[in-house]
Image (cartoon, rainbow, N blue to C red; front, top):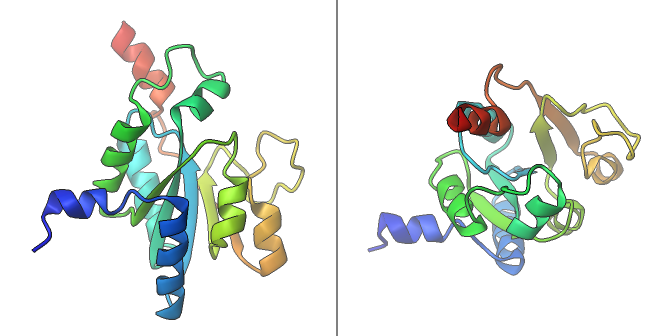
Length: 172
């Protein structure tokens, strides 16, 4: 019998395992959505967003920025607060998340290109209609979705919840 801890660990996978699982899901006729982010300190906004993202398809894959990838984003010298393994465990514990794949690049473009999800989803600070890749509102992978007839989706943010604001509140 598999323990809950083993089930949790089984949701954090390598790219090769993600490819295998997506193949199984596709053979079963399931739709797959993809989102990504740092998910440094999980808060209500994240949980609401991930729950809504999971409702778009049968399975939700989260591409998680590695520690080095987060640092290159220039958010703050102290970020990430939690390391990639800790962030992956917390994400995997959410019932809305089916797989977590850590990526080391600056963007999840190659991950999206390889996994070929049916949908790419981001929060409301991105624009699902933006196609200028130099725009800060552009959703990475939109060109892949456009080419295959997939969907690019932006989910409204929950007002008042952000990791940056939470960190500032803790510092005070």
